[in-house]
Length: 253
Image (cartoon, rainbow, N blue to C red; front, side, top):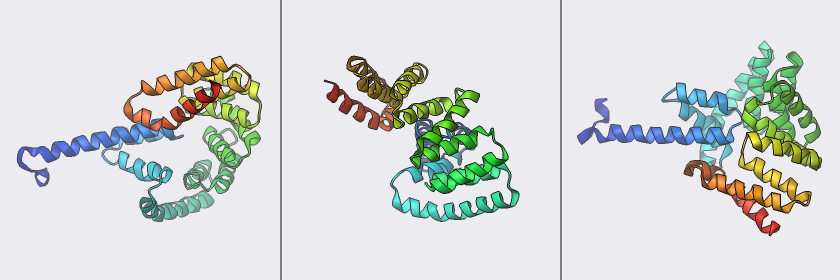
């Protein structure tokens, strides 16, 4: 470690602190925003010190507006996409089709990703990872009815799949389909188990639509208090729901 030395060894200590802060930042981002958080958190915790960097370039950058980084990463993504496509077509098992679909979805090529997930499901109809990926794509493609069918099949098999993300998606899709009473009932049960800000906000919307503005205000206030009581990094990640909650609260006044 001599090449890191400056008087007092401060550089080594600062480097370690900086990496620790970066790792915590990436784990918070993953826990709050990444649909495949389970596997990525394991990667970051056990593949150190490279895990956080891999997540940063593979997942964080594509979701954010860092154009110069996206161009840099895009060169590698295109090559990786081609490699996954070759593997899927030559080997043809569900795993490789899902790997291809995940990369296509990450690059926001939702139609291509949906077709790749379907290829995986043709080979393994009960694959929950493929059903979830397909549901995400269908939601982006504005096909809520078919997306909901995939979601319901997942929840029938594993109700806590993806730590509540699938359950939350069901609430969103029911709202998209204007099945408001079902959405309200589902979201009320959902937030009792998983208090995600988005779930509280969407439940408040349903309550407002049904004319129960007092209960809607209670949900919005709970949303805001939960975010205000969160660590700063988490609160920053959830600020869009706090902003939307305050806007809805004004309409409820």
